[in-house]
Image (cartoon, rainbow, N blue to C red; front, top):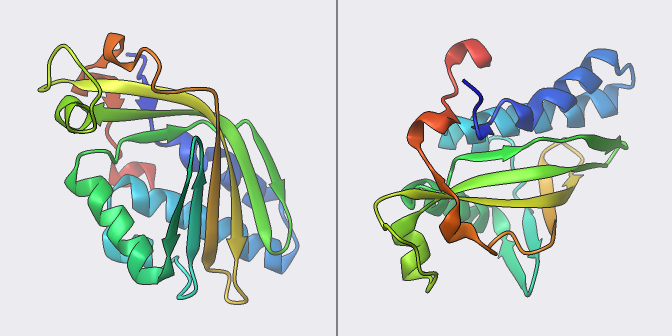
Amino acid sequence: MEYLIDQRKNWAMAEQRLADESDPRRRQVLATIVEHAKAESLPDYERLMATVSPRAHYRFFGDDVTDVVGKDGVGAFYAELVETGRNHVEHAVDRMVVDRDAITTEGPMRMAYPGAFLADAGIEVPDVDRMYLFQTRMMIVWGFDEDGLVQCEDSYNAGDGWAGIATRPIEPEQIRPVTLADL
């Protein structure tokens, strides 16, 4: 079966780069991004938050800018994603730039949104009990603190991933589950 969302793509390129990297600092930040992506996909909150800096500041750039400040703010953001069922995300990274204090990832991003969440947000969907596919191209600039923890995750979307979302229902079977064997 071909999956519409396969979260293993979130860390695939970073793992490949890590295998070939010899610089200790670059290895550290690549290992953090791999661990962060794997923990997020499970979702394993404690494991995920262990990769986040106490000075975290995430920004989401789109039609407006959303700021999530501090480790507690980032933790609340991740908890809310899971609570609302919006934690099925594929970022199929096809381009990555690795520096000693930052990594840039870019590629197609897909996310399953529950119909009830969309309806509550004012987006009309045919069936609130189904999930719908959000898709866009995304670039993320990851910044790391001196301990190699994620200090910023600034994301930029290309285009309107919401356009036509009500016409893209997705079945649970089209979301590949992450297993311990994947980790």
